[in-house]
Image (cartoon, rainbow, N blue to C red; front, side, top):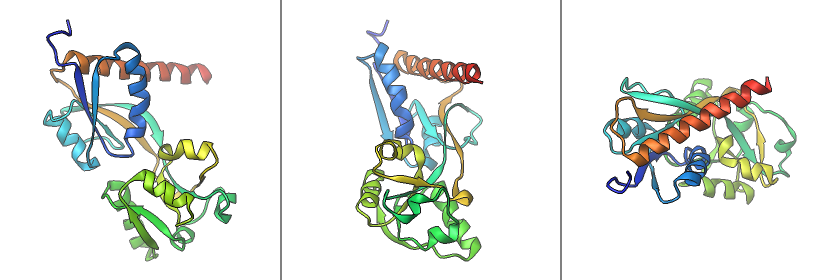
Length: 219
């Protein structure tokens, strides 16, 4: 009986994580169109703690949380790619080096993240310059700036799938910076969840199980 329960579920994700949440929301709404799912934007470093503290029911992470009370479900894989305009000479190449990327005009996200820190640290270790000349607060703003020719940007591929498929942007690999990662759905092991949150968790489990079956049948 949902009538006496709060018909909502809260989920924490950073801006990039929202792209992994959308297919889950689409599947959930088919059977539960009246439930409010509130996706809150959080810094990636805060997400595991907020789930642990019960500030949100679930989270989306690209790393395994250290907290033992948390469980994760792998959703999809992702990687960092260099986004360029389709008419950029780099667009004709499958991959470039860190040094070649460092000579480009870089558009960066101004929110701190583990991925950003790792890239900056790698350039520091190589004693190679990274030419960041524009810093923006949103992924959409960064992608638009690349389309306008203001520079290039290193972003998760999944964040730009639509623009890449439409030919608005091209993706170039920088092998040293690829950083393949598993996008994970995070929840508390022994949590008391609302009916709405339980239903959302079951939707995630069903989707990932169906995805695993599809992969095994394709092999």
